[in-house]
Image (cartoon, rainbow, N blue to C red; front, side):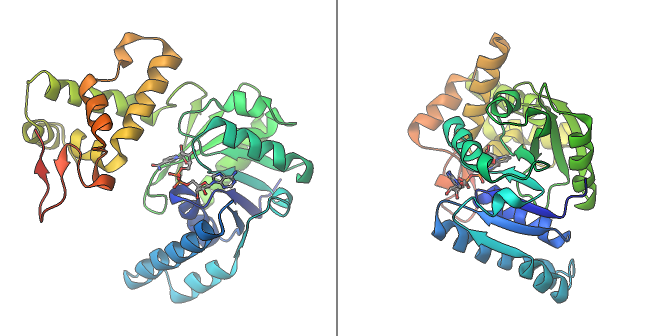
Length: 291
Ligand SMILES: NC(=O)c1ccc[n+]([C@@H]2O[C@H](COP(=O)([O-])OP(=O)(O)OC[C@H]3O[C@@H](n4cnc5c(N)ncnc54)[C@H](O)[C@@H]3O)[C@@H](O)[C@H]2O)c1
């Protein structure tokens, strides 16, 4: 089946990025959110980000205008159900996602593929609550969506080959690369990245190095473009802690134990860039290490 129309549920940080790349790639997009304000903000963000791409010579003004004309917004799920591919990118809470899929069911075409952009919830469990677990999979974009080249495609236990192939074609049309992952906590990227960040926090906690020396070591000694603590601030320390808890609970192995210092920062409300303070303090001209 050829995918022509894409429904996106949730117009936050990820949903607006997904709508952005899908419309530029030529798909007709229906963007849904429960909040009309979120939809207005998403459209303004998409337009601003596309203008930036025009000014950098990455896309033409024509492509920008055509992409915007391919997008519609709605606060109901009825028309979303009539699309060929639905990507759910709403708030990371299982009850929210389950309710969305339940509400979508009566409106779906028989061939509609259902996917979720979840970072941590079991694809198999979400799929089992729908009428089509074989046509359900994880479609996991990285943040920021227009910039990052990878999409993890996660098969639930029942996902069929046709669904996987259809989603892979979409990823290719976006000029991105798909990595196929099985449905286990953290999939691939977070399973590897988060324990590394957590270990960097342990290294700080145990006094092996300062924020500065840990980040410089990994930049200059391992050729990482950004140190692990600066990266943690960028992702959000609450998000890092939540993912470590998912790995710890889901894999039941003490090697995923979240570092108590990470928990302490989250308790303090020092969540990284979004709160102006994390492993660095961002309130001045240049970031200053907090330890
Ligand atoms: N932020 C990231 O770095 C990142 C990366 C990869 C995947 N994800 C995943 O993407 C999803 C969205 O994350 P985000 O960072 O964009 O969150 P966000 O908070 O920016 O946006 C979530 C949006 O969902 C909307 N929403 C809530 N309930 C809804 C409902 N019932 N129907 C329709 N819309 C609803 C909210 O109004 C909000 O606009 C999550 O599953 C998250 O795990 C996030």
